[in-house]
Image 1: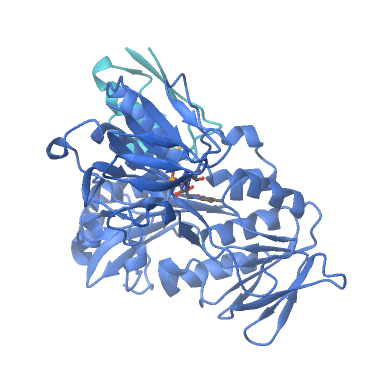
Image 2: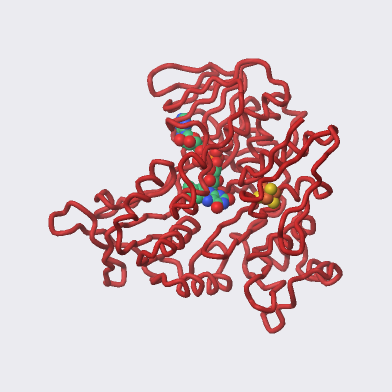
Length: 63
Length: 412
Ligand SMILES: Cc1cc2nc3c(=O)[nH]c(=O)nc-3n(C[C@H](O)[C@H](O)[C@H](O)COP(=O)(O)OP(=O)(O)OC[C@H]3O[C@@H](n4cnc5c(N)ncnc54)[C@H](O)[C@@H]3O)c2cc1C
Ligand code: SF4
């Protein structure tokens, strides 16, 4: 499993991560980010794309 | 295989990271004219100028990337037959595959007074440090050019309490978004105390009595504006001179196919602001995007594609996206607003602070502009991949039922 963390002090709700993997990242009614914190290893490529496309470099992954 | 990347900023870094991740185990050289490891530019006109972030915060994480960085090193020529990049110091780097990521620089004002102390442009970290220091001792800032960077700096300077005048030859700020939305941006800046001088151009800058510093500007309508600091924000110029004579197709950016491969040489790819790439929402025409997210996406794809044969390379399909932050408005755009003929509102929140407008050309939506509506933008990213009749988009929106609200009286 890969652990996904988003630094909420940095995230500005750009929604890049949502565009890349809508099943793992969503914006709620108030445009706040919600995400799946434990993700299957098979999704590594999507997670890496999200990490590298987030304009705020708010996303980090572990494992 | 030797992979050489020219340009050590966002697109170049993402390309290097992606190449390593995709298994490139040969040599990897990144050549960059700036003395710094890659950093991110958006905060330079926003958080950094406002004093909410420090220099270190704009560094991009570089990890333990196995790269030979050649910083403070400018490429001055390209010899495709010998597969060499020529460098300023006379040395050369040979490549098997080359990624061009040399981006843009700020356009300067070369009219009278353009070289006076106190006249700034903003593209690099050094520019931001100099401008920040100047603003600390400024009473009135003149911003020449009401594009994205001009508007952001005007907003940042207002948040610091400076008097700000912004001039533009166009009739509205953020001209690529058209006049209807332009009225809103103009009002937003006026509401925040910016003095806007629209439809007038800059004739020249003049110095103080000793001529040691800029003191103001003469405008095309015969008037003048006093200012102790001037930001020239007249857009950008491509860093393409080093490619002159190399036999690549320059339009004037590096013309590429959808796989970011240069049209004349399959061993050369381009990424970021310097790449001109066909976009579905532009009807397949090549566009240059000059925004952060596209540079990051291009870099990742170019790094992977450079390892593959041309026939096996993937296409870049994500629509152009960008954002700008001004005061309490986050403006986000998708697609090709600059090509639109009109921008009817699709959604408007009852309090008027949040909205989505369509960018329409020949009856088809080719993009949207959203204000404080990030979640709605995510919906349009799915709904709008190719040009779409406006009626169909509006019908899909009605079905969806999560609109911010009906714009009602607004022009449809
Ligand atoms: C102040 C500012 C604010 C911005 N804000 C936003 C924003 O809010 N949203 C948004 O979407 N976009 C924004 N942008 C745009 C975004 O930063 C750019 O799209 C992005 O930097 C493009 O990345 P790039 O790597 O393609 O090019 P660049 O960042 O331009 O990097 C090119 C690099 O190549 C180097 N180089 C050039 N020529 C040579 C040569 N001959 N040899 C070696 N090296 C060379 C340059 O020195 C530079 O380091 C902003 C830009 C600025 C300047
Ligand atoms: S891409 Fe980054 S800034 Fe945008 S919503 Fe995701 S985490 Fe937040």
